[in-house]
Length: 105
View 1: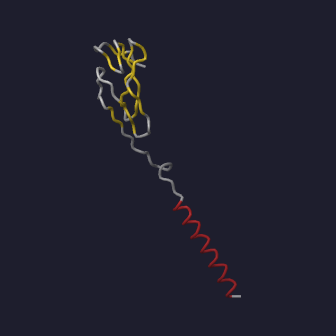
View 2 (view 1 turned 90 degrees about the vertical axis):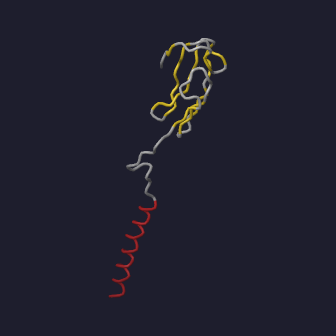
View 3 (view 1 turned 180 degrees about the horizontal axis):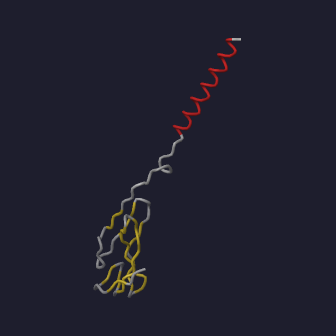
């Protein structure tokens, strides 16, 4: 009878340890109490007179472009994320020929 009881005690211990091991190995730090740090870069800084590319670590990328001959869409880094700003100016090839004024979004 003692051997039978030892078997079940050992089996219970193995099951508990296996459960703990599975819990530890499947712990996802990206979901539980962890905020991923983001970064962002803009190749032209905040220049409206040069075409640039804004890109953040989440994979968002925007190349400055003209939505019309009188409107620039400028990609910028705001709080480490790419955001697009409308800028009224004479626009050519993703850049203002002369700086004018920010329209905003």
